[in-house]
Image 1 (cartoon, rainbow, N blue to C red):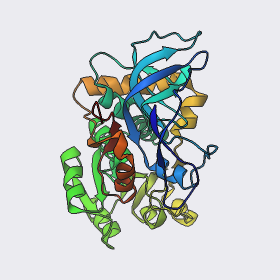
Image 2 (cartoon, rainbow, N blue to C red):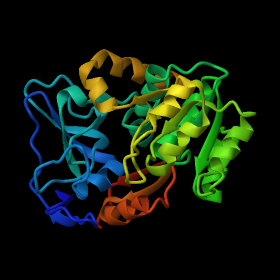
Image 3 (tube, rainbow, N blue to C red):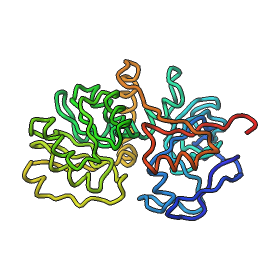
Image 4 (spheres, helix red, strand yellow):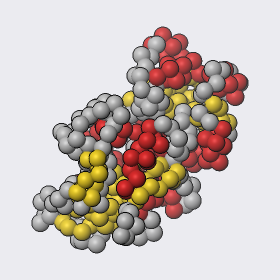
Length: 329
């Protein structure tokens, strides 16, 4: 099979196009022919050796896939031909990918594979879990979503709006601010503007945001506490800006606020029933037309380098997918 391989960790995140042996399923696992692979910020970190999980070299990047089962282990419960999506430790940037049995999520017949990957893979479950299980949002609350046009950010905007919250979103360009509004944000503010904290305060009549969803970190994470409402909740999703912020605890004290870490991958591992609950809730809202996953771009597998570079440079919106190359490519 053709795939991308990381042979050494570099700051540039280099990966090479290679021909590798086809994967073999574990006893209870599967091999899928990949119809869509998600490109995530975590991939860029993993290729640079900066992710919390460091796979052994060499490895095939890519942590989520959707496709059709072409081989199943002797103890697997799903037959070949079943469409599934799954989170994988590595291996997504390839024509074929191995999937653990416990990770396989059958895709309903009424959901396209690429939509299923976005809705049930990493982005939407992360945002649902963060907003509902960690922050316990309530209708009528104000939710500030940073990077609202990005992968997890766009999911957070839609989920908060669907639950009756008022959403303020930030982004770094006019095009991304426009997308935030199209997703349902009542107010969109550029966090490139030094006065963005004052703008959030003004938009909330000085009260601040009840919940702040932060996948950016860095200075944005620190300054977010300046616009946290009384008994507000700051959700720590990730650190796309690079630096991990040292949050001033005095601001949490003065607002009786809480900073809540969000680690969906570990949460669902510890509580498999929670994963099913979140998946069912997302499908219900998708079928009701309340969620419409934003797919910002599709790149052929052979152009994965370009896709990763575009994501790392923050020139993308929503979810970026790799899809099979045209026949004969």
